[in-house]
Length: 128
Image 1 (tube, rainbow, N blue to C red):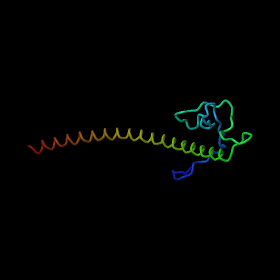
Image 2: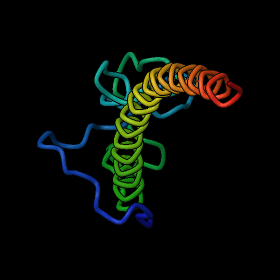
Image 3: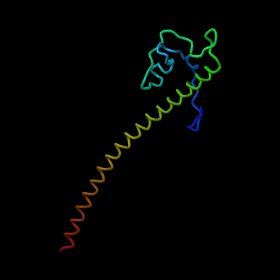
């Protein structure tokens, strides 16, 4: 996978979770299923037992392909987690800016009213 964000994903202190296949054939991840992980639109059913990953070698050991595939999935999960945090921060910024827009609009209206009143007063003085 190529990193398009300019900086490498942050490494977590916890080891990468084992990926297992649930009963419906979907991959399940311990981090993806936990409350602190990425909560996507579709959550696979939790696996009742840790089945060997698809394409496992003899004895249930993961092949090199499986390991690289799982590492890629872990990187995608980390990137999605980072994007989620950035999106939340952007949402908070937008909310703050929206409240500022309201205050700016209100003070602009007050200034416009004052200017209109001063213009009327000036016209009265000039017409005398």
